Picture 1: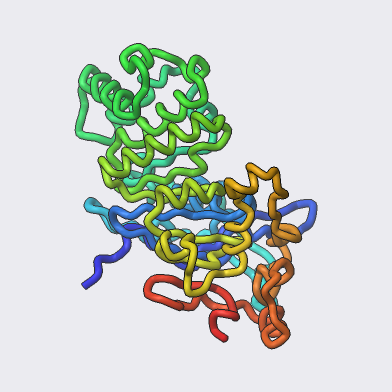
Picture 2 (picture 1 turned 90 degrees about the vertical axis):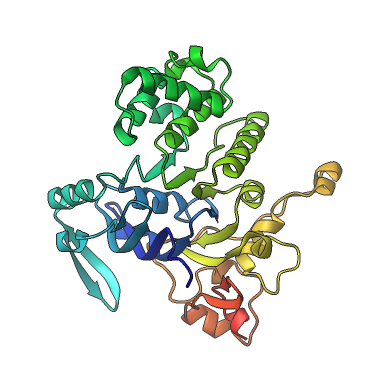
Length: 366
């Protein structure tokens, strides 16, 4: 029998209420994702596709109303099996009209209390996260070494301050921080962006989590430092083999580090499968959005000849008024007259076109 996924997300909906427009922004809309033990799942898509909101939903860090409103997030680690959204439905009342969510009433106090109780022993221990901006994620008034030590004391069997400090220094050395014993006493503002990111990676791994979420781990770093951070993540992946949810808009990073890929668009997954299949040169079929993303990456020849970059026509969809059909319909250049009405009026399901490779496109069903 195949082992169950370490993390299984089903029908996840995370909406936010836009006061000015008096409507809901469907940041994540009926999302399904699986991450298996030891796997690195790369999630890619344009800004606004829902990648980071998905990660924050898993971590229980979405607090604005209404936030997470439905779905399940099942975590099955060596220490526990738990639905991270268990009981939240008791604090939410949803009013629908024509199958569209018109109103959400949330008991915020009860909801947040439920989240905190559920995430005890999960957040920071079973699941750790590398955030986009490491400097703002650290406490500016405490040294990075002290913060890593506190993580170790909270989430491992180590209870001695001296031992925790030595363990923190080991982790700083493991992420290739120069002079780790000296850097232990540095404050976040005393470190460069690259050093801060290394310290953030050390703190995330110091608790020995079952799942690591890396949300745009190279954002804001210059190209040279980005390359070094990716090299570091590749080394740690080979050495530790930790299960990882890697979020990035940089396909080159995803193709290097990910075992499987999920392409998100308009708050949901439009294609998923093995990285070699989804991002390879000759797939059996590829979603038009994935094709457009890959085409937007400049080749060595484009750079040498100073050719024009290819852009995806149109804009990211308005997730307030999600279309009834394919979410990529208005920007798709592959629609034929034969399936045009179907694409416009009916959203396709994720359909398996080869083992483990699924695509949400009517052309794949033709």
